[in-house]
Length: 259
Length: 359
Image (cartoon, rainbow over all chains, first blue to last red; front, side):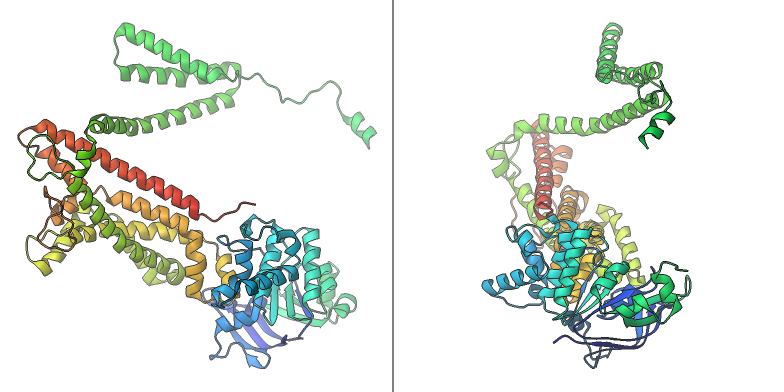
């Protein structure tokens, strides 16, 4: 059920500004792919173009092809809403819906998409998603409480539960652990490990150890200078990138000799 | 390590954290002394109450910083001077409010009883009668204005924030709304009269027309307050919703508006409170009468409202002026109470609807 992603000649713009230039990569199904690189190199922008969240920003547009399971995401016949139902996303900062309880937050994706659920079914989805996000044991006694009342790490796992409750094929994660302490980070990483049997996961991270720990493949993005577009420098199996990368720029970045 | 620390520490020197301070009761003491001194001198020299209060305030503002300058330092003295000035400004701002409330309550409270609230002024000369007709008219016309303005105002604000963005249409609309906020209320009344005159001929007096006139004043307030509230909803929530595959309109209806609902309700209530006391437009389009009118759409039937009732009771009191003037004060008190209830309701609703963050 999980899908692979083929990206070819992808240029991403904000208005007239070319943010990411000419990306070609294949993201394999049922594995974890990490995107690393310095700030501003276009990792997050690239990630957002994979489920058409990029165009939510006024003036933002994309040239080139993104194929998911052989279908082009940017085909004129493709409805972006359908794309986002298939390709879920977790953001850098936890963003549970403040008007909803923990229970309603998990079900938000289904409820807002008009899925009619019987009480028993809904309870099942909530328990399964929260258990999948490693949060069930912490919140099972207070599902009716507001989602905003949880700690930052719990909120982030609640957002992951919300994203996997709609059962997407692909899960995009934009620095999901950057606001979390090491214990919550480790919980999220365990979660990524257990999710990769069912989902294709793409994760943006600034934490090299995290990329090495969780991913099968790693893509390194870099930018030539301020105001210049970001580029994909190298994509290889994670083991190779962190031991014998093809490009000297990758090695310089990974070993801390950046710039 | 600890050895190094002990040797580098200079012996016999203390940190300069302790300084002489005025005792905690210094401010109330100075206040008391200033009041007593001013009262004493004032009684001897036969000043008015206002004079005594002003002199007491001046004494306080001078003495407390002076004392502080002698005992403490310059910074503390400046601090005490500015905090006393801020408190003085607050007291001055409260004076008109409290004296207005006192005046209205002392003049109006004795009027209010069952008859005053349930009788109209039909065939009343001299004492007796009540404001029932004006109360009904005010509630009816204000409710009409609210029903017209709230959907238009909220939808316009949704356009401005969610769809318009920085486009030329949106910014010119924003400008027009700002201009509309400043429209004199009498112009709104004239506009409504001219509009309804087209359909019902000259001399039209219609409760619905009054509602339209008030809604002209209300729409811009609702638009601006709702716009501010929608802007406060973080974009992350919209993105979270889009990323779940929720369409845009549903994101607005189910995520953005509920998150902002507390502020929107408060803004709407304040807009109602703002227009409920309008007199001028209603004089023109709703007219004045002594009878109860419950018909919203009858074109030749004038409808009394509380502000218009107050205006005529005071300016044209008739044969026995005292009764009429007393009724005006009673109606003014009722109007203030209605506005206060609306404000309390807004706070209550705002608290109930506000996003919860309890653990």
